[in-house]
Image (cartoon, rainbow, N blue to C red; front, side, top):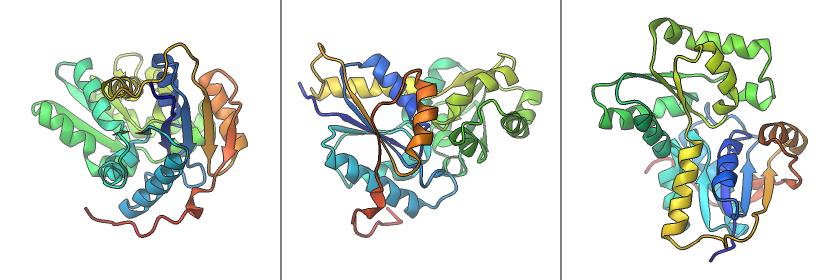
Length: 277
């Protein structure tokens, strides 16, 4: 039995979608969460910058004695997962592979839409994996750079958010898609709006639940599980605006966030970060 916490990080509040599923599936585990709220969004930043941010956060979480890293951010998973695996001995789980599996399990064939940050869509991480397993499926991908800031500003029900969704998704509502992958952990917070927009005709897929399953399986395989007869604790760290994070995080999780701390991770000396593999 291993009572060390699981480390989870995201560019901001979106990774709480993964925390919510982890808490539901493996309630005995302690969780340390880091949201990089000072530097959100990641989707318009370059590969070396995202790698540096991710490594700074990983080093901080290592200092908290975590037993595993969960990259609850599609952009960081697409552009920094393999890099981080070379920088730490900790097991790491990203959100892209679980998201692809969830999509493949949800529908047998058809037209699959993918929305994410500019960096995630540009990386073709989802498109290439889906084509590998379903070469005959039609895969449509679109960056939606405005959605993350709207979620971070807690504008989930604002008219501007509905206008942004219409701008990004109107073509697919007209032409028709069978499933839509929410390739950003912020986007599940917009699920009710997106379901309403498509009038329930499109299967929405996010990776949070599948990611939690993978974490649980890996903990069991490596014998890293916490004792089952306990309730896990949570600590939340952010790089800016802990008050705003507490407000939106509490509303999303349906319970108050008691332990939210400010942590400027960029003050840590991590040395040079390579821009190429």
